[in-house]
Length: 392
Image (cartoon, rainbow, N blue to C red; front, side):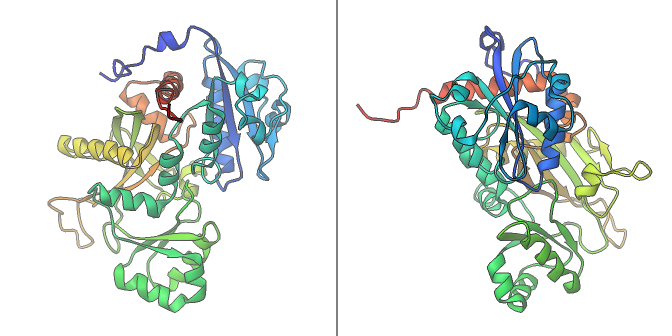
């Protein structure tokens, strides 16, 4: 069923060898994750179908030539992409000029950028100005998927169940710490999760068990963003929720993968659990998750609804929290609640990341997944050509 899903005749798209720019790095707290994702894509992309142009952005925001991009990536670009890549004098302004040599030379851009200045709509606006096809959500979907406060408002408008939360501005916290704590404790109960509103990969996130931990957690999150999201934990004190994930693929007719579960090696699936696992005590992915058929169907439907609520395109990973089977007293919970946590519009894309692993379990391998995402980018760009931008 999944293999027959894509309505676009991919063979028609591939009459010529597409020139694909793989963009990685970026001025973000998730810079290193982007490098890992890009290295995996560059090794797996089919060189018979694509001419690959690696483009790096360093932590200072400088756009790099292929030679310097090789150093940024940490592996030889020639080895990663099978040779080629050429030297390009790359700068952001050049990509934003539709008639520039760089813009005209690229058929599709795969922005393997995570976090701010890459996954938040900023780089997508540049692609729109350049009139270049690109993988992933547009300006609105990317921005909504990055800002957890805006995202949650869209989820609420769509009637999707989620855990209670409070949004706090950094300036409010610094101007009135006691008042901010009172407002949070009036609306929510411990344990809490404190997060920067605009970041991913669990960077800057803390689990807070009591008031003594709340201040340091707010300080940490405030270091990464001007807006902070404080969420009420699922399951209650002494009980860990189940952490479930679904991959979504498509444009106007998105489909969901099988449901996976992460059993973290810590209290929650934080940055170290995701990217610095201990061999002695690793986090454990369970694919597919052990759920009832009705629960799987509900989660998949919620994932697609979340994708549409944020006007996403191409790809996204949707994360859920679920009440455990038993409460802190050991009593069985008759109907465990399922709560939408967040959507990630450019999830980690290493060969062992959950997004591609979930599709692999559904029947789409890593290289084929890259093909489909590029095809979806071309499809969406062609559809945009039907839009009129002037009257007459």
